Length: 226
Ligand SMILES: NC(=O)c1ccc[n+]([C@@H]2O[C@H](COP(=O)([O-])OP(=O)(O)OC[C@H]3O[C@@H](n4cnc5c(N)ncnc54)[C@H](OP(=O)(O)O)[C@@H]3O)[C@@H](O)[C@H]2O)c1
Figure 1 (cartoon, helix red, strand yellow):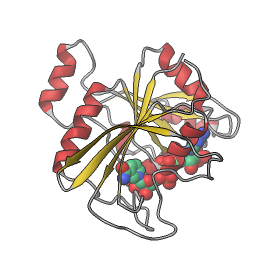
Figure 2 (cartoon, rainbow, N blue to C red; figure 1 turned 60 degrees about the vertical axis):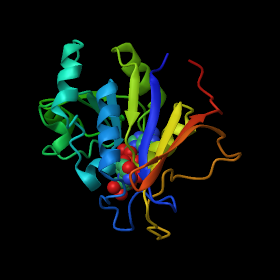
Figure 3 (cartoon, helix red, strand yellow; figure 1 turned 180 degrees about the vertical axis):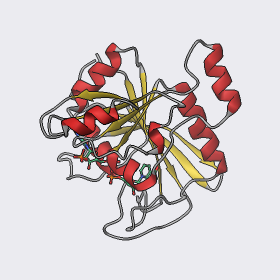
Figure 4 (cartoon, rainbow, N blue to C red; figure 1 turned 135 degrees about the horizontal axis):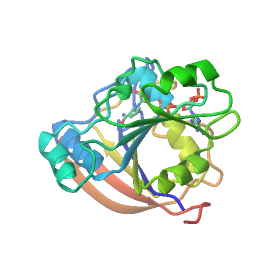
């Protein structure tokens, strides 16, 4: 069994999620930030790759006080669990995602340094899945076992690829901001190597939001059966 997994990402019209510097780029608008905050509040866990932690140093908490209160009224923690996919345990110990506002799980592989894991355990739960890379299927199974039913993936390009490759993604929500970024080396919604044949999607909805467009897609080709 695995949780419901959806990727939420902001992209330029040409498919880039940052520029060649790989630093955080403001692609979406205030209307979209509010939508993302609501999605976070409705999720049990928010997942990111270590590339995103190193590039953007995100906090990944619910920003709206009202939404945090709404969660607490339902008997849940103020913020969803934050999950970092980090095979070699490269996460800096002062990363904002390790703040005490929310529980954090760092998923590493057997390659990770034991001393670093022990130090990290003072700030986060550390789970070990996979030999060289984090075994994402085993991680999702574990999350389901600890009660996580809805996972929101907030990038980046390589984690999105890994999850899609393993057939673990149910939906993709792409907000297209009103810009073209360009750059052959800029990260895209999905990096890695091409899927052959391409993964087929079914359009769920299209909506004009702020100065851009929100599209929601259901992933049709699924290797993993729930
Ligand atoms: N526009 C947006 O909405 C948005 C959102 C998020 C991020 N971003 C941008 O995306 C960029 C970061 O993307 P990224 O591709 O460099 O990093 P990423 O997807 O955040 O993290 C990728 C890393 O995760 C680790 N990993 C461990 N096991 C994995 C597995 N099974 N499959 C895939 N990855 C695995 C790998 O590093 P190890 O092998 O070392 O573990 C891999 O390099 C930044 O520029 C950021 O600003 C944009």
